[in-house]
Image 1: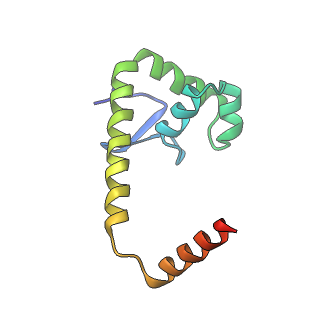
Image 2 (image 1 turned 45 degrees about the horizontal axis):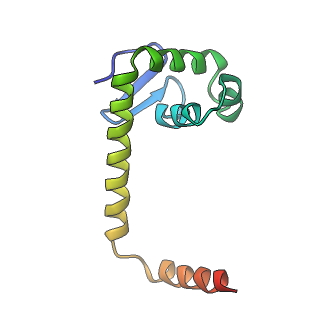
Length: 107
């Protein structure tokens, strides 16, 4: 379980967002771990202030083990949801569009 933070809102066990936004910490921290700077993150996620970006990064660095565990859990749950979605029958229109897209890709 992640410690509380003034910069985060917990909507569910695997749904932690930057307070007052719809931006999940997994989005911001993934970009941060890919090398984006705080300024670049604030520019990319325009609903997040530079202060919030610095606050989330500081929170991450202070709670790295717990946040990394949260991120692994979030990723695992996301993969399970995607696999379940893929197992669901697709409407005919989706199948036709996929077929058209595959044919165009071959050209």
